[in-house]
Length: 351
Image (cartoon, rainbow, N blue to C red; front, side, top):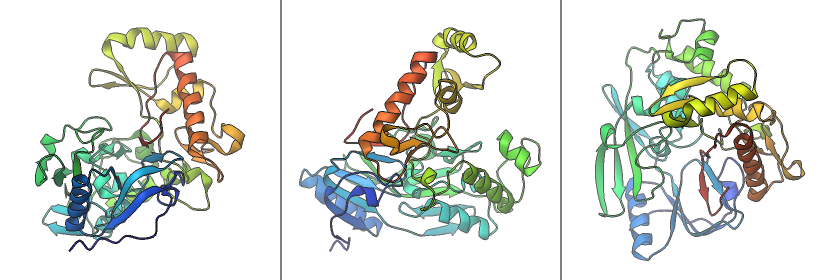
């Protein structure tokens, strides 16, 4: 028998870090991988739309909610076998990272403080401070909704790229667990991010005790309102709302010239596969949207700490947030000819 729990129907605003979103028609909390597979299989057989919910940190849900079954991925825990750790998809990501560091294990500490669940991390190749999960993932277990089978996918099968994988933009695969390779010497992954290296007082490429790297990352994230705090509205967000844009090589010369003509001085740019990666935060600020820039009725705003986060100031609707997102996106395009794309998953809403 399926042991999944079916609580009273909530609004999705109670389950997203933005604290926005209307109700689902049905809500099921799957507390084991078997529950998760059975619940999704049953809904598919009934022709019922399914929305998987992890930590709710990467979802923007429309005010009308979701007309289907909301499945909370609530299987938790992890098991270690040497330098490989298998983690259940519903496990809180930062609690897992903290557990590794406390056990004297390294490799994922630069991804500390990221909200959400483990199962969501491979979908968009979560990354921060010079690290991506793609560098540590060995494989994952997945329920294939097309073949109706549980499959193992290795890292090379997942098509990892900047903030994406073959799992992003499709709901055919349900992640059940993820295997990560960790460092048993207790040292961090090589420090690659300049701001983090400066904070730690080391050179790029050096390694430090994992606990030191975690503490430094958490400090930097708190300073940008990127560590969840119920009393701080700057953290009522989905993290970075826009990805850093990658301008294709064929368009790069014209776009870079337009930026140079518009703004004096140098600007951040980085080589990327097939083009040049630009800083979304830099473009947003130079397009006239400062930290704290308000949206409709001051119910939403850019974070007062970081321009990449769009925040709910307490009484917002999803449409308020989307209105601000459109204004920022269109303002950057008008000034620089660069199109920003949202990083969160948009459910029953568009920008």
